[in-house]
Picture 1 (cartoon, rainbow, N blue to C red):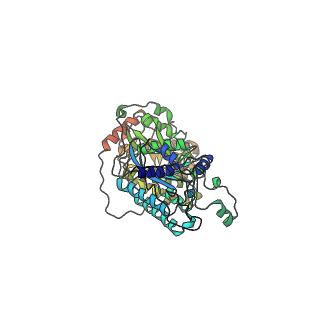
Picture 2: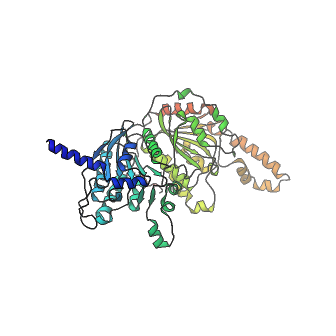
Picture 3: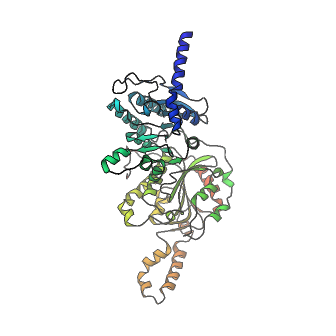
Length: 512
């Protein structure tokens, strides 16, 4: 037995140590090894590895007898701040992290365990793609991953972290995940590489230009972008701390912070009373959430709407808000897509939604219409209408036209609708309404500007005063700005026991 123990320990040590020269090359590229990454991500000493001894069973075509253990992926389970997660890390030092049959089987196993136990799944991607010398089993392996990504969707949180190349079919697993992190300079993700692009189109492009982190920050493929692995793993850990382990668990909560009685007088100074003056909606959010801390999704994509995860009175919430600093906070094709996906994620995992409204409408123009803004706007409308989690909306300033309806109005199922005294809810702004309603009168008036000013004042006084919607039950309360955090916290407490019976159907038909 002593001899067997020595032999077993020696083998485990060799597997753990890996190829020293390959590890040095990995570090020379500015990248950690797979095991170093797992150590940085997980609680110290918490990682339990599975399938350590797995090896490819393929032969020939540059494989021969070179069959390293682990087959280029390290898989298992550990904890983050004491909470269970499942994780796999592709090992670029073994076959370039390429995916073969054994490699895929290990990922399938850890994904199945994550789904069965109801724990988040984290994928650390650093792979040259499908292992060409294994042929179709490699493609079959990818299909198995994608199938499990879809099975896990809405059941457990799925997080993909791109820490090297992620090319071809491999890119679809991050696309099916809930969140995708990318690290600048080392992360590259695309369906076809620069050589194929050059062969097909004649266009010469670098890996960074084709699929770098900043490229995908602007396309919406990357949810978060970081400058280095350390800050990336820190944000992954923070994100996990905000999420439930699965769709049957409530979001993790902390002790109450006294928010139900807390006033925030700074809010009145952040938002100008004038409807056309910009301000940063994130400054409003910082006053509403615990310790001013939040994590923003897709910061560089569709910045005219902000989507954030944070805590209010210790409870995780999802916040959607128009951003007046970008395009005056209008909704457009990309903003609708961004917000719709976030709303659906929060609803799937029982995270209450807080919507901060200051929207002048949908972005007009032929480009938007030809890009299908009607269809894309319907995605956000569908997402809110379908959501059964507690929903609170706060109309900060203006809410015009169809965009008012889409931004979680009472008419589409908002549970608690609040408004500041600065709110203006209308089909359109007063000047536009007057120009449409009184076109003939203005055209024949002796003093058209004077008449216009008089009509605008009359329209505003009759139809756009702060209590017009409240008088009709479309707003539950008009609140002082400094009371907003307390009002939201009390509303969340009131709605904590909300239940909704699902509609009896297989599934709806989202306007994808």
